[in-house]
Image 1 (cartoon, helix red, strand yellow):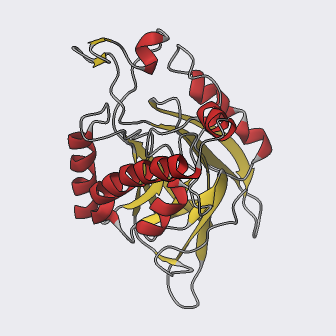
Image 2: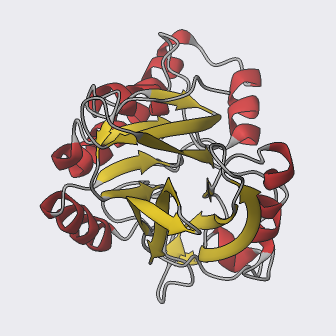
Image 3: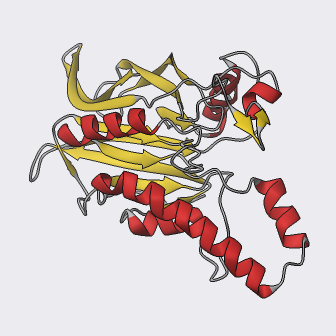
Length: 291
């Protein structure tokens, strides 16, 4: 698990105002004429940049080499020159998707590792190169992000924790499949209030409510909601007229009778606030998710 993230734009404490986060992942870019819905991605990036959104990379930005494909390529025993050709081809995909994402440079909380990536001859990967290009911390497979909002100098603060993972396992047929997997993470991370996962890819959001007591003064029962969010994707499935090698061919989802991806990204608004109850005031973070 990656180290806890406590800073955005070199700020240990965030100002006492709403913060917008847009998770982006599962673009699965395989070229300008591929399945990735690039116009939709461009629109959402433009929308986010106009509103000072912070982005979070959920993995699978490029659609090159799944884990099984990487294993087969490694066992192929290619000559050095052949390896260099493949290395350059992977780099070209990364450069192209990097150019599309370029407006977001410096606006990333970080980038997670996905399933689809290439390991270059110098040891870097598609994900680490994109993180470097976008000036984003590379978060590895899983991360807990800690965001602390502070009212001002010598004033109080409140913290929210976010758990994020690219995802794992079969996509499933029902739209609740990914949410079921996320829900079980709450047992391992009881103090996390926002869980994010891609991979499926579907857009979905479920809220559960829990009880706690205030930590100072006379104990007061408080409600703390937990949000489970599937972060969508951009790879179109069941495209009319799709073909391969000169004949009609469907993509991954079509071949396996899977539901098409729900395209797009959610937007998460985190708002620090005061709650007044039974003559007691405590600070918390309100979470709203739209998609």
